[in-house]
Structure formats: C-alpha cells, structure tokens
Image (cartoon, rainbow, N blue to C red; front, side, top):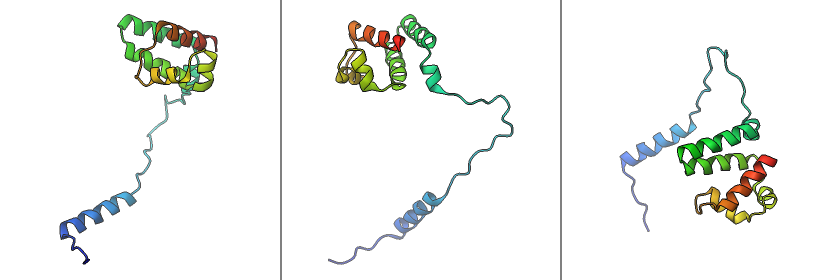
Length: 119
C-alpha cells in the first residue's frame, strides 16, 4: 500500500502544535508580597466551628448540594475508608453520597457529622 500524501495545510498545523507544546510559561512575579500569607486548608477543614457554621448556613439557604460539598471537603482531610469505619457506615455509601449518586439518609448524615465533630 502506498504512502498517503498529506496536505500542506495539515503539515503547517502539525508544526504549529509541536512548537506550542515546547513553550514554557514564565512564572508570574508579584510586585510586592505585602498582605499575602500562606494558607493551610487542612487547618480550616479540621476546625469544628467552621464546619458547624457552614452546615447551618446550608440549612438556612436550603442548599443540599453545598452541604454535600462541605462534607466532601471535610472528609477529604481524613482517610475516607477509616472515616467510614469509624462512622459505622459502608464505604460504598460514603462514596455514593459524596459523588452525588445517592442522597444521604438522616441516619448516615448524622453519623458523618458526629464523627467529624468528634475527631
């Protein structure tokens, strides 16, 4: 079988794509670092007061999606498998709840909140 001829336009396009991949972006340098501090999200995620206030705000706003996102964020600070064992719920139920496949029952939700507050 013979070699297929590639159009000139396609050759130019493929050369442009290869050269764009090679370019490196320069890091952005700030003029001054005044007012900038390092943030550790795990410290915030492990704070019980932030967790309870965030859950209450979700109840006030009637926002179940945000509630699941908050639970996912706080549980992400811990090992999910160990968390599921301590909360006495199955790992699949926890993952399905966090990925939006199932809505948590009141029992599962209270067990998760109890475990997070007691950690």
